[in-house]
Length: 154
Length: 250
Image (tube, rainbow over all chains, first blue to last red; front, side, top):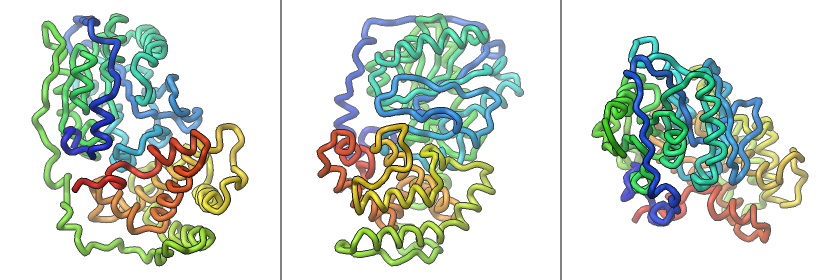
């Protein structure tokens, strides 16, 4: 379904024309430990927030913290777009924010451990506008000894 | 998403990501990305299928073994047919097993839509309650309003765009948006508690074409498009009715 040909023409045109500039000549590459020694954090662009948090506003470039031990019932979504499915999220948080799966992979020894903190931003703004938030998130991740990030779009 | 990966990697964190829109990933050059053939909103593929989900995540982690990049790999596993469920033909003649109120016609006064909306919400309550019990959670709530207050506000707005807003801590248009999105979540959770509504398209077609709330949303879209306020106009253009309902594939 995320194949472009399956997306309505008007939305497809918007996606084809979306400005993704600013990353053409940036090729960072970090090597790391074996997977079963890595500490992993999750970030989603689904504009997820805790019930106790402020919702994301239109064009928001800030972020929300999702604790590693969060009750899935405390996680809600305030993304502005209506052009993606929310019924999967309504049935199972893991279909877009697979925190429970990460904990299981840690229990199984596939990954080393799961961070105490995970994050969400709204994917609506240009990615360059999220740069300050991303760098602040990175500092928090490193303070929690995270070395690997799994990024999940919506 | 790819841009964020680049920034994290510049900060010294190794990244791997799911990609849904392949051309965006190609343009932002994240170090490692796994393109998946799943619909927007379901990047890990299938709700309530832990093994399927773990396999997707493991495939994304496998990219961390690459010695150089950028790496963009296509994940070949489609959503199983049973999960993709009924196609359009199989849905023909299917009816929601709820006694929904009759849809007010195009010329009905909005007060009639408001009344029918409250009746419809009440008729869905047993299914919504079942969904919450079964799943142990609800996604209704970002508006901070009860579902009845959210519905009454949407109905009142249809009647009078200067109707008192139940929150004063954010723009009225944002409150309106959160209110109708909570209602959409309520309807979505209720209908997916029933058999036969497993794809987003089935739920969406039902909501926008067979419910009073759907009728209210179409009317709301028209009102917002006619509104001179930029935020309301934006809602009408982009943020009430999905594109595939406005411009269905021919």
